[in-house]
Length: 486
Image 1 (cartoon, rainbow, N blue to C red):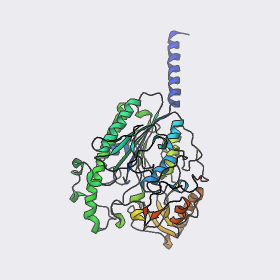
Image 2: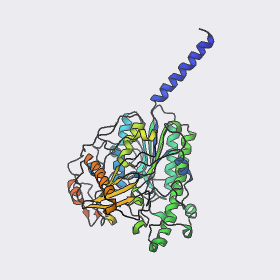
Image 3: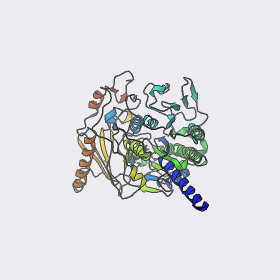
Image 4: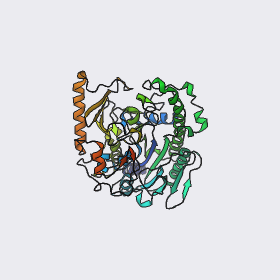
């Protein structure tokens, strides 16, 4: 062989080895979760008020699931479903401030078993032992590096506990900025690690209180310039504009914090092998359909529909839109599918990683969302189960259909088509889809709230959660008949 041929053979061998290594290397995962940020409140989503330049940029590079829904639009139930890939009816996690049982197999435990380093920053809200109590290491569901607190929305004086220390500490300044800086430090420290990392960044804004947003960002949104959604009654406009001043200010400030984090991924040269997810646990009614600001739990879009952007090493940098919906239990198996990690049989959600890799705006699917037991100010509302497709939202109470909206023709959901004769065939089709989804999780004959409270030994008093931290929750963890899609 000639020297020239030897050199060519050597170069081809190196390229082959590099390609094999790159193929086998598991991607990092950075999961950014915000709180109460509804899907419509972004520049890329068409909101004419809000400034979200960094997330608009991400939407132009990521896969945008336009019809993502919160499986149960309130904090603790969503988070439990996200970490387990299971539905609230299967875990009993359908009220705020419950403890997620140790028996549940969770996100970080699964990724850790596949060789990942795991880290959690920010709001947790799954411990049930008191909002300012330390979440003990054995109750952190597989997250090793820890700077977090059970629950707080004191953005300018937010507490946290660090790793094994029992000392309560406080983030420096406005907590979304401080948490972003900590995430950036973590990326710098682990960018060159042999093992990949799962970094969960949980930012508690733009959840109320809205007045605590930084003044420089509130100045961007004079109340008299804010345009209110057409489905907000006129008598609420003044109150809603005042709330939106702070809500949008939080949104823009958090957008800055997330932008800095995304920049760090680029500067640390790890973005090319990192899955980035941006989403929220639920939305915010903000006066729509006459619901008070700060309201969630209800079945309208402003409460249930959430942003969901996912940027992966498998996609180009040209933004893609997927109209097929995704619901919370689908997220974990999809991430595992993208990371080439085995999906445990306990997971009930569906792995739609192929749709992420090959986005198709024409694909449709049906996904389930619910409220097993409204509580607090929403106790007066019916419990419900709902189905979402790329065109329709359909919701049923135990007595029957209560909502049917054509979300393409009627994006503000002003024209309820439920039980109208001319839409009987559409309603029947959606009823069948809903029943199919409920049957797969063993809830096809869903009951009134009292049934589930009794089943899980939980108590409400006039709609308010009773302290049940010492109760035994039913007979333990329930496994549903649904198996994961590998």
